[in-house]
Image (cartoon, rainbow, N blue to C red; front, side, top):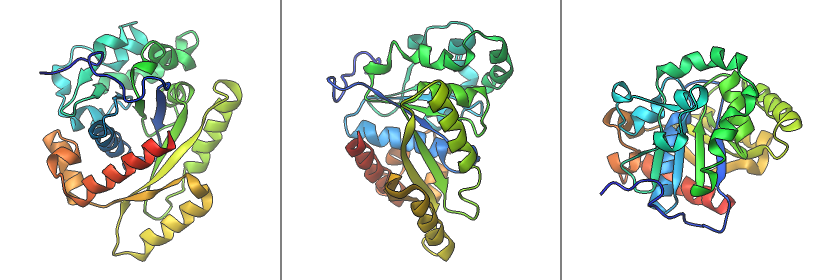
Length: 268
């Protein structure tokens, strides 16, 4: 039986829900991979999780096997058409994990939001009624610093930053942190970095090790101990519409995201 999001109990009903923006202005660093697989791993750990796909590419939506062409409504309608967020929440293959989908229609929101009143706080207001229904709400942000991302920064309690183990890994992160500080000073005083996760680590290269060291010097204890490896299985899973723990349960990628989920839970 497929359960609705209000039929699933939270793991810690006495704690407020936490909203984390999964963000990096560089593309291809593992944002959607982390959104899908971390949420699934948390679901296995009996956490109730909602993933907001806030990227017009809709990779998190398709990563959970949701057919975008068959959707009548998506997050765009909540942003600009006052469509109830509760009616957009879809169940996934992982019990306790839910998705608000995105389609290419969301691409137009950057322009359309410009003329909206209180345009930076729309997502925050949308999520307010359901925030405490979940242990975690993840926002899978687009690879840019436009109005969609600003909405994510205003709505979030903290940032989860995936950084790929490659040359110029920190390129753009400085600009992201400047944007975070601007939003923190003007719109969201409590905003902070929740954690940094290193992705696409290649054990065969010295470069990957050097990048981890460089990022660790920059972010200190914000960097998770768990490192996500470069993995064929992780790359294949989205084409099957499954998180890695369902597609290849004992693969290196699945085990890494399981460890990351435990770290995330320990941090709160």
